Amino acid sequence: MQYQVGDLVLWYKGPVPARSGGKFRNRWFGPYVVTRVTPNNVVALEDPDGEPVGKHVNVNRLKPYKAPELSVVPMTTPFETSHPETLSPDVHTPPTT
Image 1 (cartoon, one colour):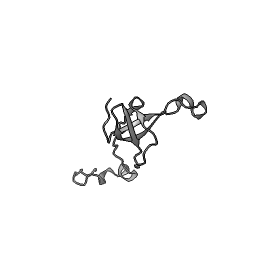
Image 2 (cartoon, helix red, strand yellow):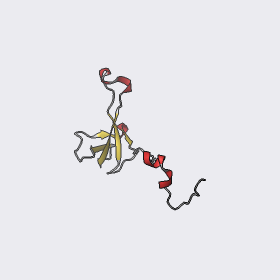
Image 3 (spheres, rainbow, N blue to C red):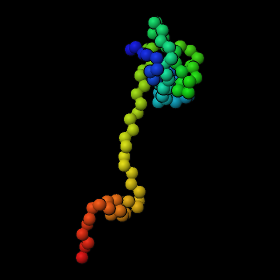
Image 4 (cartoon, rainbow, N blue to C red):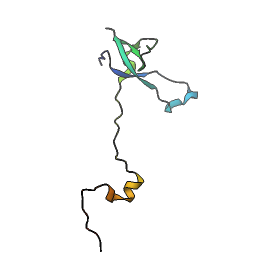
């Protein structure tokens, strides 16, 4: 995959010691920003704060970062659920007898 300057990527940092979480530990870190791309598939990275990462990384250890999609759920307060008539003042409901 070809990366461009400004792309957000995740960096695979390889095997981890067994004492640090083993097979359940996350091995992909980031997101990082691509700051330079060389012709031999090596990129320079920096963290989102603008601090450069100390070494160059081969593109085989990168994958594109996809931001998680947040679902919007309408929230109601306890007052709104206990008094639904206050939510729709335009709708007239006939009085009950």
